[in-house]
Figure 1 (cartoon, rainbow, N blue to C red):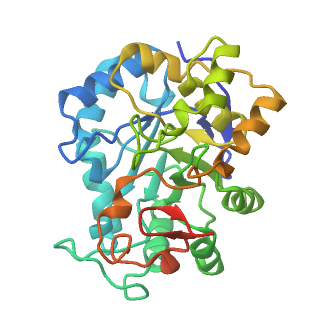
Figure 2 (cartoon, one colour):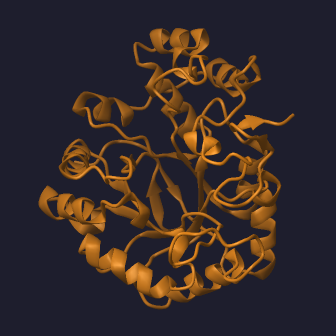
Length: 320
């Protein structure tokens, strides 16, 4: 039986469950672990699975879906176009469908606005294929019946404004890092005005300390709210995400945690206000993801923060 959680209506008219299972488990793909994780999630009532070509586990995700006993039509399935396939959109989608063993996906995302060469070298900003060119190829997929909706990931307001000037189809979703340390109110407001649903990846941040600073799940206010609801700090963060109108896609290999993550709370207005303000605490307003440290020059997969449209500096710290 599907879990009793809200769904959000996309600009296509289709419904998207507000909580999904995220499937990124590192460059190995997760193997049998991700397969069992998805099976457990579906058994516990999840009806939304989020994977990607670049997660290296579409085969295992598809196997879990087929063996779950849950009809395909009841599952909202998302996968993503990798950076090095921006010039071969239709072919890449078909590769993903073949790996997943399905005829269609409910949502197909451009994983990043950056294009790479076939040997995984970043193509400079503005050079072909641009994200606008890639999007136009994605729009053509809607005519094939192989995708129900298309969207983007890791797009800022700046990039969305460029895209929407040229697009015939408004993205159904924009999947970005979102959590109480990075609430992205400006992006959220912009997307709501354009009819774009925000999806939060890494909605629980990271489980351990970041640069010696505790992550938000150990913050005293988050812990206090959790105790008041007889729940976990993770449930508080996910419930805040859904209650503010965003989709959340946490990941966990632990069956008990998987169940907790789809058991939402009804937070009070005071709770929501406290969580909205959490990023204002010293050292809190930042990304919690490691890719900000991949480059010595402070670039994100070949583009500067200015080109991506993120108000950050190297390390993922908010610039102002």
